[in-house]
Image (tube, rainbow, N blue to C red; front, side, top):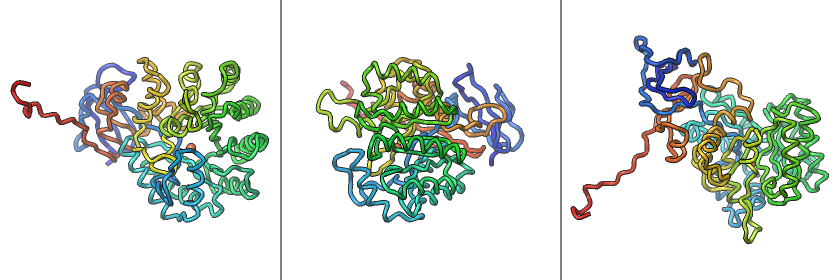
Length: 420
Ligand code: FE2
């Protein structure tokens, strides 16, 4: 049933509690004390925070839930992960990819994540995973929004066929052009790859999301090339730079100059703190770098930052629960954004900032909007992150697609001896 009334909802931008009336999958009224029309399903949200669905800005659904195949990543580095994935992807099948990706999407939806951007490796010559995820995108669009990035994992110029495979992926319907300039064989190839990505995006009218400078090397400076192209060509709001961990290692003088250039465009940054706090700094002794882009400073400079899990139980990272609340919680810590307004900013990174990165227009709790929303057992974003809550209800296109029992600790005071 996609017609329902949610009672006693708390919204971030409004004092007091309101009711939300949903008809035929859209929000038609938001007001206190709405009388329930006859025979409509009513849900009491009990004063819980109601937010738009969470946005997963960066994940690799082709490799989710494939850890240990054929072996686990013992060294914990990005490059060992790429090597293991190189062996695993030879045995991919459409059914294999779709089953794992669908399981992950359901896990995310139960956690309130209904907008997902997935990268898919298009240097695998059969494009098995690409076709699988393009098909899955259509199969799930009734309850979740999936964007597919054509991602040349091994580099566009590392093998002669990769450039053609990337373009073929766009012809087949990938939504976004990806890249990995820091993994191209030379600096020159990396620069050339970014020019090619922008050309393809123009030619096929697609968005851009580049894995950029995901290393600790302070000389990895492809972000400046992306910024330069965005300034010269315009359309920066359609461009995302993912990871950019080297930005955390740049000297302050260079970072200051780059931040000035960033203000001349409006590209998006997508950080993946769960994975990068574990992957980066592996060659450091001490002090050991955090392996994170300059999230706090980007936010202070008005740059749009959103977040991704990147991995769920795959060759790079064997944790991951499907919860973006966990990602925002980690961001507060590793980006040192512990001020109350900064905590709210981290929450926004898994909500409206993500919608902005992905260019999702129909997003937010407003009359006329799609009835996609999440009910949290918390009064504020701070409480949601502090207790790392799971949603009590998830509504997609007006349908209740997940109900979770709130987690409750069970300490039994009656079990203690009287003298305690
Ligand atoms: Fe990634």
